[in-house]
Image (cartoon, rainbow, N blue to C red; front, side, top):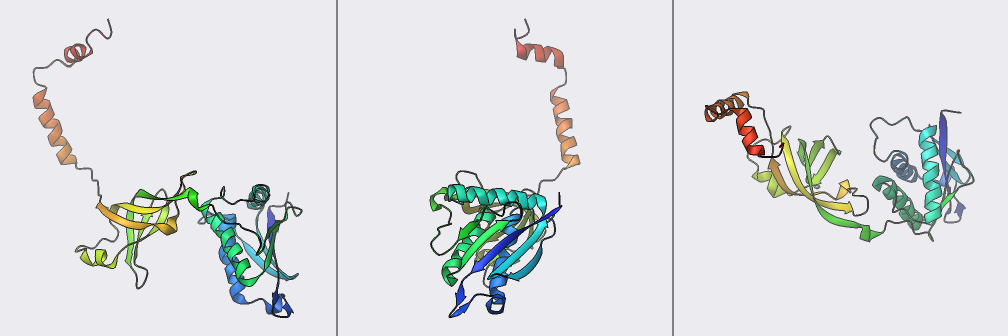
Length: 259
């Protein structure tokens, strides 16, 4: 089997009296699709993902994205399930948001999008101004969340936030308040912190919407192994055990358990 496959996104529509074609398709529209395709194919592990190549063809306009066959097989199954359920609630957050972005774009431009793969060209997901591919809002609720990691950036001109590098969730961008940052007397960068935040969480899957995070509390958290302190505790404990036979003490604690 070939190691590569492709996704085809066909766009149908018009610009005024002109039928949509490569010559009338604006670069911003291309960029919009490019921004969504990575989340469609690789919603979580972007750092180690395979190469994605791109081509634009006539007919009216066809976006062709070529990548590993394994990713195409998985995405083909996703398209079939969306068609079957007529819902995107089961998708991982970034994939669902990418579908929603295409749906919004369809409303704005009055375009029809036909999405299919080289694995199953007969399964075609159609997104047009009449479709309703949006997540069900009531499965996303505000939750109090806790994270731990290294603070790598803080500030911003208009969007004030901090960046926390975590082992479990990767790098998180957490909205904060300018006054909070002004009050910090010490340099916070590259120190470990606990974070208490508010954010949207899926009540069915537990997934977190990383774009919704807002800082509630910054917790100074820097656990250190103090060898001298530990040895002092051991010395104190030894004094308390003078004259006590450990075996007799354990037998007394157990009582008749082993009888």
